[in-house]
Amino acid sequence: MHCHSHDLDMLDRRLIDSYQRGLPVCPRPFHAMAECLGTSEAQVIDRLQRLQALGVLSRVGAVFDHAMAGASLLAAVAVPEEQRDAFAELINQTPGVNHNYAREHHYNLWFVVTAPEEKSLAARLTRLEALLGRSILRLPMEESFHIDLAFTIPWAELE
Image (cartoon, rainbow, N blue to C red; front, side, top):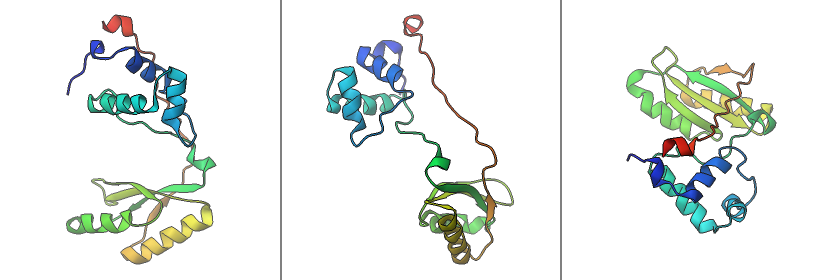
């Protein structure tokens, strides 16, 4: 679906301008957003869903420094290509696994594993290695890259 700037009213624009950063971290973030914008929680949720359906937003959610919230690392495993989906399913069932994706490489399944702390992370990976019957390449983060994409939208120029 294609969207033009004139399809977005002031509330849409204020949502976009106000919450590219600073999503409230609280039990009811949309309620907190609504209070700041002078509207209802239901309207905020409806607008965000509409903006997502229009392709204006790709994701609504918090991004946090995972190193402050526990332990994690990037992992990879080499599996037979014809069994890749079955291995991916096993990996996806492991607690703390996210971001499981295929790559055209000797290590053809990559994923991120998180845990409350390093000892639990190591235990999860050891159990997963036993389940898969394969060694897992463990790639701890050495340097954090701060991805912070937020833009000032020149609404007037888009009219």
